[in-house]
Length: 425
Image (cartoon, rainbow, N blue to C red; front, side):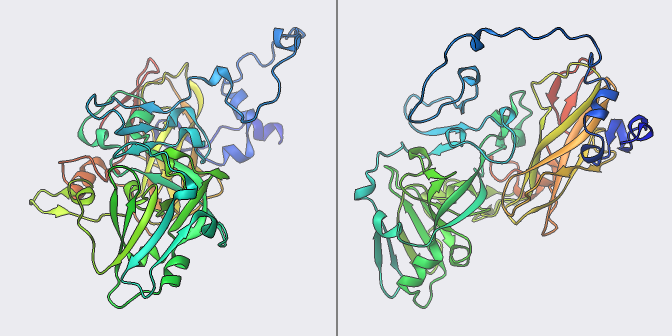
């Protein structure tokens, strides 16, 4: 890079300091130094002294690796347990403490309608019956002989972000939006198993049942089941953990989390949805005209700025990288726009490769904060043309009652003090 290039003014692309995303590719640390991030880069630096840990032997080998003790605070966010049903509820992914697109297995969010069963895989099986020509049952050894497929996909509880729909909580982004995780899932395509049973006339839905104490039941259109649904056996290369459905679960890409039935042991092929307690008492949306919107399975486009976000504090004016996550149940994220002036102007963020269908996509945006008030937000568009709505439009789509399917734009306000708060826009 020439001296003229290094000293050129960064190109502004939207109001309140948003800079062109090409800076990540062409300027790098030169920009950071020019805008004050490097601080004392040219000061005299004394030769380093050996720290204490270089002067003694460390720990030895281990059978299963664990995070550093200095990362002990990076844990799932525990919900407030109900004293009557302490094993029910959820834990959330601490989104603000992670980066990239993959969620570590131990930090993947949990949502339980009962307790986590302790299943012996040698005694577990999957039955497919109903409107089929030949009902069949597969034990674990039989499933392991099938061709495996691997996909990287997100799972999001349809109640995720429900707190932001109803109020403006001043808690961490993980506490508000952390019923969201993304993993590499490996297993057997459900379509292979359905083909072996042979579908009978009239088959149009399947009903999947979990093997936990509450026998969670969800209905899935047969068209979806024959598309990209897998009976997942592995998560991020290792066997699925108990809280994620060990020894097998359904992965229904792009659909609300409860449809991805954990501990699945039975699938019934039927001619219509089951209207079970799990999908009528919950996961429906009461519209303003009194009607109930059911089986809204596919999750709409959504994005979040994670750095900076509520509860954080920016140290001083200067250059920052805005980063966050975007996703859509309809397909791949095509575009993420960012605003720093409360929606008066928007600019395209850089999407970090790979950008995959029904998967979390990391986006980044260079920003020169001048130390004044700012309102940051992001807006996602998927490859089907669906655009993340404002709060008002999201409420109009799904009603004010309940906490399901909320994908409204999430703004954060940056004060002159650098403190970041949750706001409406």
